[in-house]
Amino acid sequence: MKILVLGGYGLIGEAVLERLIEDGHDLVGLGRDVGQAQRRKPQVRWVAADMSRLLCATDWMPMLADVEAVVNAAGALQDGPRDQLDAIHRGSVAALVTACEQAGVPRLVQVSAIGADLDSDNAFFRTKAEGDRIVASSSLDWTILRPGLVIAPAAYGGTALLRALAAAPVIVPAVLADRPIQTVSVADVAEAVSRAVAGGLPRAQVVDLVEKRARPLAAVLREFRAWLGLPKAPVVEVPAIVGRFAGAVADGLGLLGWRSPLRSAALAALEKGITGDAKTWSEITGHPPRALEATLAAMPAHVQERWFARLWLLKPVVFAVVSMFWMTSGIVGVVRHDAAADILVSRGLSPTLALGAVLVGSVADILVGAAVLVRSFARAALVAMIAITLSYLAAATALAPDLWLDPLGAMVKAVPALCLVLVALAILEER
Image (cartoon, one colour):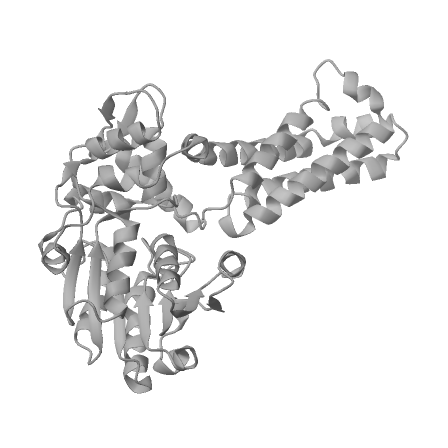
């Protein structure tokens, strides 16, 4: 069967692809940035497209040729420069449904979310519910799956945050630690999708995918800490005001293109708890989705998991320090341009050339320091930092090699600064 999978390289979408590949289907994956996905899953035909721009049925028709089923595993948490919830969750779904009806695509599997509600004041849950309503009112053979907190070997968004909090030294900090959570293994979500596309689920069904028992967030974090192989540590409730402040900061970073799971939309969802009803899936299969303990046991943690968990919380610190260092260096260069130019003049440069070099270098430092805070510019800014630093070290070595022995270590300190930039470049990717 030829199947189109939307969001095919996401946390859920990738697991769905892997399962459908095992099932022997012919797959087409859709996403905005498919370069890495093409390298990792070359057996899938990838289509680069932004769902938020596919708002007419005619936009979808070229992708539906000979397709027999569509799986929508795409979504976004909160509005931002790269995400428009209404367009992704409602507008594009409405256009897709119409296109499927016109093209004769019989089956649609919609991966929604626990908590989807038309009356919700949370834009994520409201727009998800609007998309679900459109699917449910269609003439298609549809299934809507609503997973709880999805746990996967891949670490992205909330699953990354759980690892990071669980790996915190001495104590495990948690906002809303008492809120009830029901998790689900991404493998169980993929199993449900596999059954749905094969016609193995009752048609026109909304199915919650959650483990049978809810547990407080604190208990989830303790399970993750044990899974990481770390010694026990108390879970400490973080005051709500700290959580709101973190959410406000994360929302600000969201405007710069960074998709933090600490954004206010995620905290609002956690406030209500993440719970559903495992009854329908249990009646269909004879058993509920696996419990968190079984999910974690099926994906053993090794040293790379601990590295990731510890580095994840350090990532914003690394980028903040890199940005601050470069912008401060540039500002000091502008303010003290005469003193900096004098050093170059004493090495044989003309006053005009020396002053120009100082000002150009200082402005460049400020620009790359600011640019690294914008997600879409971050990689280019980091590469520019490496190039600028190497050029600075090479020029200084040629013109003033004695600066390597300067008691304040101006040249020597550039080396660890360069290493920090390399670390930032290494941990830049989000998924």
